Structures are given as structure tokens and as C-alpha cells.
Image 1 (cartoon, rainbow, N blue to C red):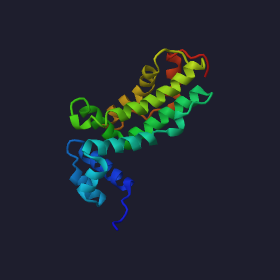
Image 2 (spheres, rainbow, N blue to C red):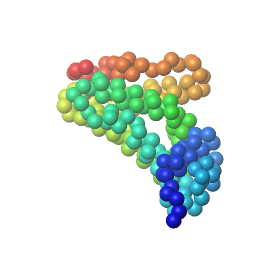
Image 3 (spheres, rainbow, N blue to C red):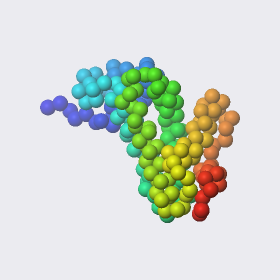
Image 4 (cartoon, rainbow, N blue to C red):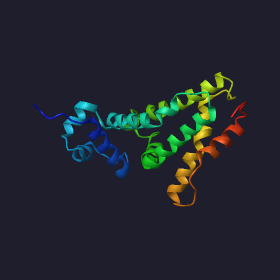
Length: 188
């Protein structure tokens, strides 16, 4: 009987190869070698490179502050948790995120990956929608609100990668306070 294969070992290997080499240079052969499995194992389990990387992104999206995705009555605390989770995600996976953003519009192999980040951001939008429905936050489009909330983190991380040390780390409290001021909240 063959040894059980740890899916996390495969996903960790795929993430490491993507992080080090970029999506286009990452191959199933390199992932299989890094994971210590046969390339056919990857194909049987995931189908192709795009689906394998979609599984990587799905796992990482699930790790994106899952506790922050359940709204409480404290809008500021919920938004701070989302911002902190997103900042941690960018610290850990910034090169993968930027590689994805660069190639997703034009690389058909990334078609399977495209819905995953949108779903994660959609979960954050659900938190905002819940606060809007409860009257704690104004605005009409929860997805636009999430992009306004998280946009500075993404821009800061991008500039920080190009010019290390040029941008100080973001303070989630300050970011949320500025966001709440801009979105004309009724309560803090």
C-alpha cells in the first residue's frame, strides 16, 4: 500500500515554487520534486497547474483572518481585524499576490485561480454589508468599501517592495479610523 500523501506538503511546495519563481516559471515538475511526490500524483489530485495553484490560493485565502470574517457589533474592531489579516497576508505572500495581479488578466492558466481572491475579498465585503444593514456603517457598495479599506495596504506593500523602507508599516487602527471618517460612519 502506498504511503499517504500530505496535501499540505504539496500545497506548501507549490506555494514555495510560485513565490520563488513566479507563476509562469513554476512547473508541476518543480512542485512535485519539492514535495517529494511524482508529477502524476499532482495531475491525479489537481488536474493541472492552474487547479493546483487555485488550491494553494484557496488554502491561503482561508487563512486570511477567518476570525475577522464574522461580524460583531464593533465595526472598528472588525475592520481592524480585516486590515491586520490582509497586512499579514501581504507580508507572507506579497510576491505571489503581485505575480497573480500581474498575470491574471492575460494568463489562461490562471483562470482557475482568479475566483479565489475575489471570494476572500467578498467575505470581507459581507462583514461590511452586515454593518451597513445594522446601521453602523453607511455606503451602498460593500465591495467598493472593502477595496477602499484594503487599497492603501496593497499600495503600501507594492511601494515597499520596490523601495524597501520607504513606507512605514501601516497601523490598522489609524487605517480604520481614516476609513471610517471617509465612509461617514454613525458609530465607532
